[in-house]
Image 1 (cartoon, rainbow, N blue to C red):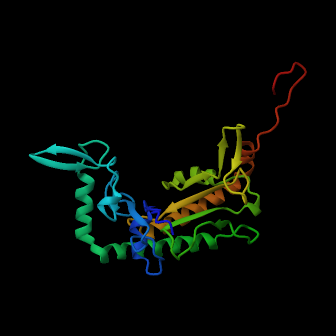
Image 2: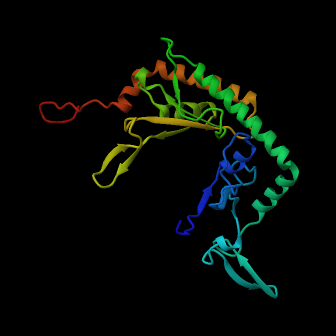
Image 3: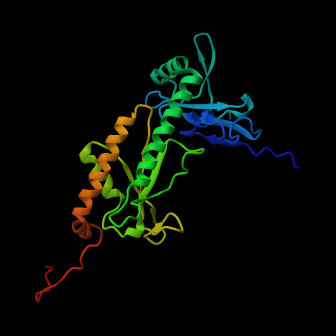
Length: 260
């Protein structure tokens, strides 16, 4: 109504190489007139080396003059968009090779395989049951539709287990798997208290995620599932030991006031 331009930058760090190959994905890119720029991480699902990142602008007018630095070089002028002028070119070369080697069909095949493997892993976690038949995990991700090939869950709070997802992360390292565990809280500097990130979860709630990469084969995921089952059995047998970690005993004092 007032002619204002409310531009949108789409941070597609992970999804930029996933969403284009999902047929039922709603419009999120330059099909929307208000999207002015899109960034993506080539080193994540773009299959390039670490440090590869991309930004694409709809048009030159959307690129702020404060971002580009015009330099005189080799008898002409060129714009540099990096934090400093000289940067390694390995990421660009690898990304260019992957674009030509794989093409759209190749990237779609990789994504389809990753999503299928993520579904397999998700179904395996859903099938894991506690001794009384209740599910071991509660899923947090969006499932198979319009989702990254990332499986996210947490140990079922209803089971009131003495161990949490951070313990699971440490236990899984024994079998050479790194399952990232996270605490779902934050430290509030205003009152120095630990507070929950979400209103429907307590401050001591934890979670974990598993990123299914292109080089994760089905055989590897089967090994991961069996390793997790073994870890759950081990943690259950050591259950009492986790009590001291998460629920420390109150200090007892003797007659002389020393802590026992």
